[in-house]
Length: 238
Length: 238
Image 1 (cartoon, each protein chain N blue to C red):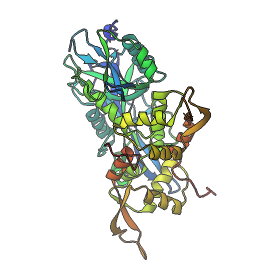
Image 2: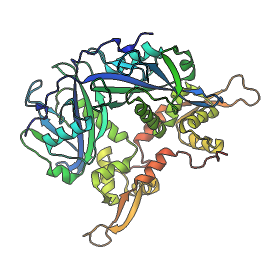
Image 3: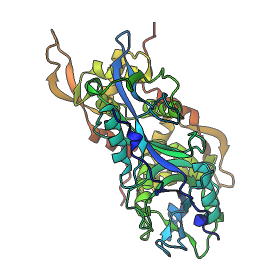
Image 4: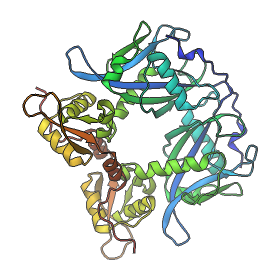
């Protein structure tokens, strides 16, 4: 049987990393929606077009470190964690020769997004109404949005947007922004409390007048156990 | 603000594809367990060690096509679909210079696995008791097993192992093999039927004596709707 590696790699394919960042920020009506930062290209190919933050992979830098460095360099953002999203490698995705891009994604809190760099070559745009981006970056953002919207660990995602503690109303705002539709408050409360992924902190929102709402935190242990144990009762392994 | 792509890629990093295949096959006691095919390396580095099927990414071949081609070439397998699993790119994962591997995975049915090539340089091994593999391939298989075991779409996975129609007992065998523990048949039946992802075919297992069991099929539409609609009742977007 022939060995597959008799086909040689001529090293003409280059490797890059890019990152899709989402944060919840108000749109022009004040309603929170998903925003993402873009960076203007200052060299060919596709000079002047907006693109995802990213850059080449240096030979001695780990993938995630390269994603974090290029993100910090261009947008000043340093998300607590980056997660690998997908690798995009279509033969003709870049006009300057084949580039395979390992794409990371992260969710950042609104206050971190508000502190991030802006300038003539960096701007935040609503993720659902992007301009035409460089390369296949529109497709990459669309894929990231799809993953965000179909991901089951909603409470975990909300946690990444909101921080340690949050009210149920804040949590519902996140869901409404991600799913792009209003949700019934009573049903939302019932579903989330039944999910077992929220814990009461015993505290209430500071500064709220008359009956301040309870603060919750995300319980990652509950989620993990649920994902791994779909059957509540097992036959003893006698 | 500096542009991240001022750091140049010197093209010394090479790109490869590899594939993790799982199939259910009986172990030495006849119990179905997860097996995976391995290929013996016939060149340096790590000559003689067992490795995942794979090879270099040619400059003009799409990632998935390269994964499919190298898989077919080494094991004769042609799974209906390959799914991208993860990209492994640690700086020191290969002793012969940096290699970034885009890893795909697939589940194949037992009969396809039984028809696949074997020989002095290809063999199937139980995925949970692997020998020491080349490079970081043990870690890659462990990651694939973890993803398989935590994936929520169990019925979809079972479908990939079993084919179009199956009995509840066959489905339970898949779950038991994937989760590595026995499951209570009555509770299993209740949970799966309540999940909304199975449809009765109206047929029964052929050739079974006295009360042949019902045949089911996987309903992908139900699963997709469920994944996207965690809240059953919404407030009208008036």
